[in-house]
Length: 157
Image 1 (cartoon, rainbow, N blue to C red):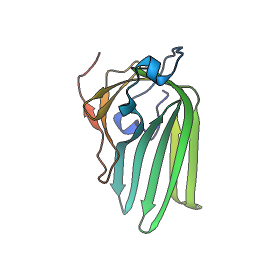
Image 2: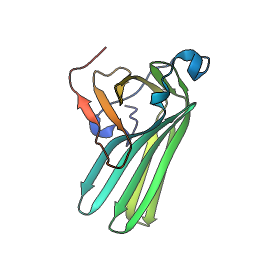
Image 3: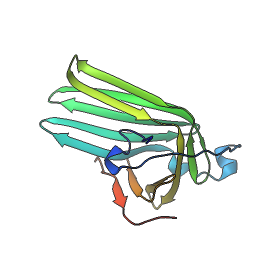
């Protein structure tokens, strides 16, 4: 299994497949609404918290995690170049990052795996469909209030 770890492990989704695309965002019909930072999920427990966000920019995808415990916090990010069309994001490279606040305390990890994510913009939400999977998640744009991703059960195209 090649998950977009920390991005989608809570949802059990995986990415896979390949495609070859050329051109730029405007010519390919990529909605400018796709670009920006999206809230994925937040996990809290025992005083610790982790927030995962996905940032999509022209030619680049970044998966980031912010971890905290009390007044201690750190952030890690994994990035890859990407080819983006009007309905797919092709992540071109595997990437991972890990940091600890101090040895054995507040370990924060994130990764991004090579593969294809199908997407569509529905209103102001980014809906992701992982290649080879029947599960779909809906992301909200990052803002003042963190919005947990929603799993859209039984949706497939």
